[in-house]
Length: 268
Image (cartoon, rainbow, N blue to C red; front, side, top):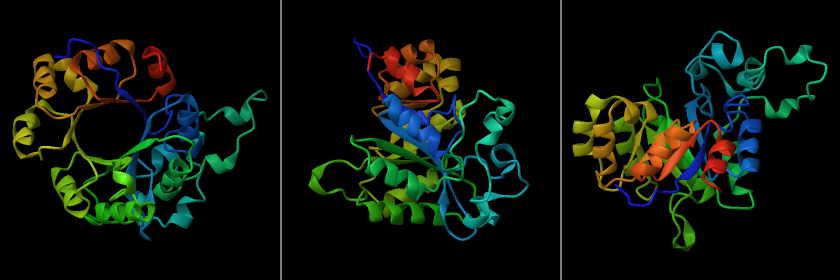
């Protein structure tokens, strides 16, 4: 246990997603404007091989359409509105600001990384690969290929990659480690019973990514994870009490729907 509370990195969960539709370009721009030090996204492969930032396997919740991401082409997804679900009555509000539709469509991982690469300060990106998926290991392969395009697999100048790859799938992270040994990986954890096995098979440099509910419901487990020797990144931290608990545990990064609020609590 640290004697002084830690000051963790603040990572925007699917962008500034409390007030904006998750995974839209607007949500990420708002997070950057708020000062977020990192951005988190989920990625899935389309039927024609594009990586898109979408959490759910189907399109019903975020695009109001029947069908799967994995069986849709990018062109088909680009026709959909991925933001209207967040505020379905906005079109009836005469005082609501006019929406810029370019911010509301499906967001490709490439576009998100281009936004980060062009930003005027260092911003890190935590990419979660979703499993199980019909494309299996092709997801990590495509992520690695894209990171090569940006020069982030083996960064020049000796600095660390601004990207880390996360997954609940241990196999997926082993695959990513083989493809890109210098890109950090994060083993996500949502069930207490998985920890005894995972801590034995994780690589020595792997990061642990438990959910805040797990740490809250199992305080002794939280202490063991914090004392495991691995850096700890926690999701999804949205209240002051949750943040202070993470600080007590020495957590290195918190992933939050409310980046501006958490940055304010930390005095950043």
